[in-house]
Length: 118
Image (tube, rainbow, N blue to C red; front, side, top):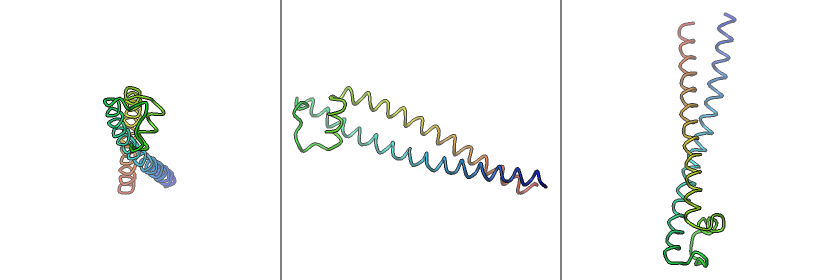
């Protein structure tokens, strides 16, 4: 009986930890997707400005994100490289989310099995 209580407590702890990690990783994944969308729209604006040869003196009606990226990376090639880095981070976050959800599901399944058979 004591062994059952220890196993149950450990599984409950694992469920809580992996549930919280899954939740926060999901929030980070959604946020990184929004960042990628903003960067893609800024890239389109910057490429349009480069075609019109207005990158050095951008018009005031461009988005604040495009203005910030022009100040940070100076051209579309630098922004493309930055977007690739953000995509790698986003992929890593997605992989972590899959792992955390799998561990959460596994812990929950084990907890149910322990509850049913012990």
